[in-house]
Length: 182
Picture 1 (cartoon, rainbow, N blue to C red):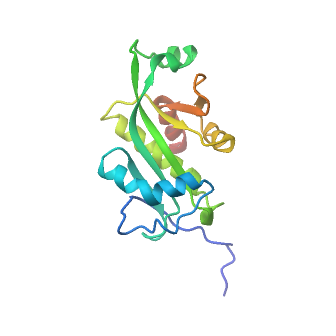
Picture 2: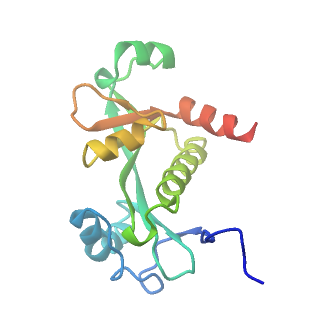
Picture 3: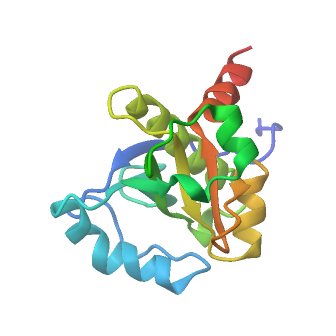
């Protein structure tokens, strides 16, 4: 008897990048800079505590995608006035944020939903950590228009003074996860 349910989607899990376990050499996405980062720079950034790197894997070795998180700050004046007012932002010069520095999905896993899984895990992890280490928002620099559209579909908005820089407030992230639980 054959399985009539169609192609099976792989079961994924998230893990911190482990250079001795995860096959970084086989990873390939649409942006060479993101491939190079994973293969040549990620390990050093982990060691220096500059970035936390998380991989999405179906088997503990293959990397379906990865993302990085770091502490960041946003100049208070960069936030659009209506957003600052809605968030009741204190009048500080710098505001704490989390930087989603890189997010990449392997070409091999195109169409598997891996991109959304990566983003949702990054946002959830940032939200969870913001309860212990303050962070007002997640900030990302979109590589191109396609990436920008991807982030905007999940509620990110432009920071007007910085081309391709977007952010999403922790308040919005919390609402996003609350809505998923209903």
